[in-house]
Length: 74
Image 1 (cartoon, rainbow, N blue to C red):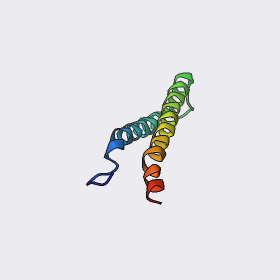
Image 2 (cartoon, rainbow, N blue to C red; image 1 turned 180 degrees about the horizontal axis):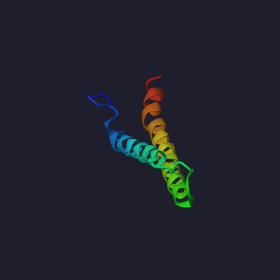
Image 3 (cartoon, one colour; image 1 turned 90 degrees about the horizontal axis):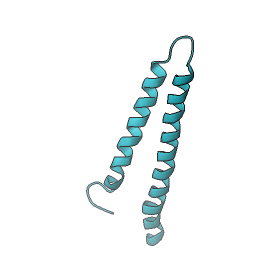
């Protein structure tokens, strides 16, 4: 794993996580003053579920890839 960017293999996931966060922030900022409507709630939930799934997968991959290296060294 060494090299200049040892987390480079995860960079696509990092970009997608950042994209989903920006999307969620934009959805929240665009909410009407009187509260979210049904479509707003649907979009917010959809984005949060996507972010949750991506983060769970990403953390599992990190544990598998990077923590296994620690175990090998110990």
